Image (cartoon, rainbow, N blue to C red; front, top):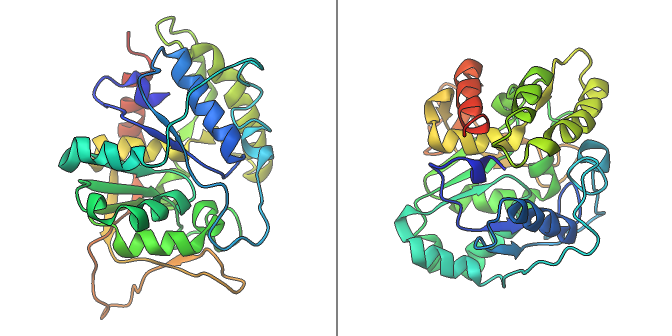
Length: 290
């Protein structure tokens, strides 16, 4: 929604895959949101349906609802077009060094694109990955954040081979909190064609967080912060280390860096601190715009 509403962002494709819901449901949701905006020109590309090392598929309907967008669901007779996976290669070749890839879910699909389109991947300007937790607890387990936990093998692959990589972990995303006051303001904006959806989606999401994080004053919108950082990198502070994800044992999905004083610094930007006031300013600018 945010990318569609921000005139400074040119959204050129959406890849939908498994995570909180199935790949098919995520694909339908993406197409529905584009349809509401009258943006059928943006291709929706179905991605991965499971991690590369499938153990047991775990979905999280208690967080975002059975259909992925709270109580909202596309009409039963909703028809939409999907594009083949090779569309990713075509989009990269069309935009080359101006294209930014933002991965806010499990990294299975992105890792697959690295394997299938190695020459094209080199053309991408930069990568932004939402995942991990450094020096803070996880949310899927005590140690692991959900995206890295969902497919640690693919996450490791992307962290190893992606150039110009920025990671937005729980360190910052958990503080990007959407409050009832913010939702009320956006819902009253008659120019926002998503306004009618925001309150029921927020209410469902917030109920989950009231139980999992007692006392929280709203619901963190993890994915959105990653998009916001693309345009406004200074709303977070960074450290520069190459990260690794544990792929097995009880620490599966845990992300870590070698933080010892004598360790070698890396090239990957890892966000560790959020300037919330700056984030709010940018959020309101887009969501309340006419």
